[in-house]
Amino acid sequence: LVSYMLPVDPTANYLMAAAWRDSEGRATVGRNCSGSRFGTGQPHYITAADPARATGEWIQAAEVAQPYPGGLPDQCEILVSNITSRQPAEWDNILFAKIDEPAP
Image 1 (tube, rainbow, N blue to C red):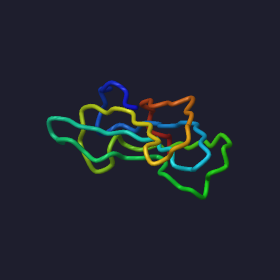
Image 2 (cartoon, rainbow, N blue to C red; image 1 turned 135 degrees about the horizontal axis):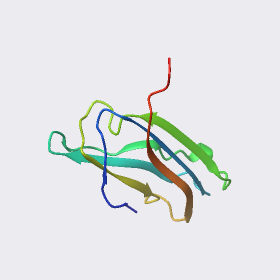
Image 3 (cartoon, one colour; image 1 turned 90 degrees about the vertical axis):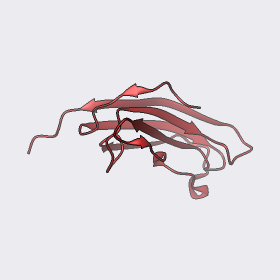
Image 4 (cartoon, rainbow, N blue to C red; image 1 turned 45 degrees about the horizontal axis):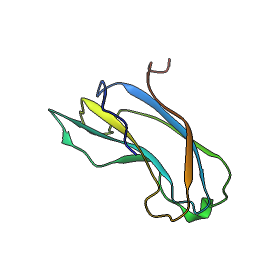
């Protein structure tokens, strides 16, 4: 599942967070970014498939980073997938928001 493209500031920090559950530990959450100075990047995941977390319980992950570390994208789309599993997965509370730089 892919969202529509969201405009981003390539040098700003963004908080990306999500909750999900699946019984095989194969669900993923991430983003794919592109732009005139960047081209099309590879997906950047805040969580990757990991059968060790196949509990069926809700799991949460969060990351603070530039939209695509090391790149200069103009836009990003949010990705959620469960393509390597035959069991269903659920996602909730997906967040992608620009945040201020933390104070020193």
